[in-house]
Image (cartoon, rainbow, N blue to C red; front, side, top):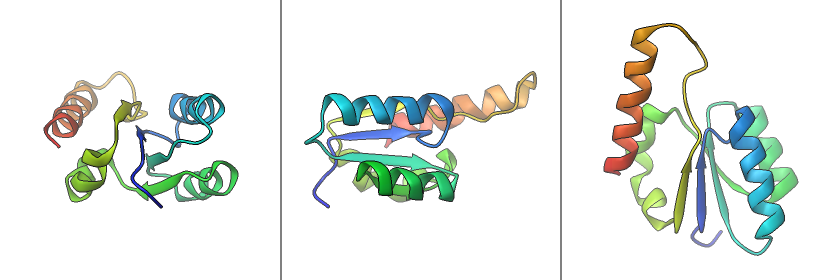
Length: 102
């Protein structure tokens, strides 16, 4: 696939999936790189929308830096789905910082 114009982290989560569908609806001719942890949902996105996919945790995005740099825009919807724990918030902040450094 050609270079994606949009990359979506958390593409298999509630917000990321909705965002990916909306991007596809509004921009049907643009490439989308879906990044998420849930393999079955990523396969569904690839099948249904033609998105390209990377199965990865946010902490692993450094290995995919070149692909992310090719994107025109990155939508960051990825986060841990556990609430009420200070370490979760710190980990989400660290992962967001790492994404910004890519």
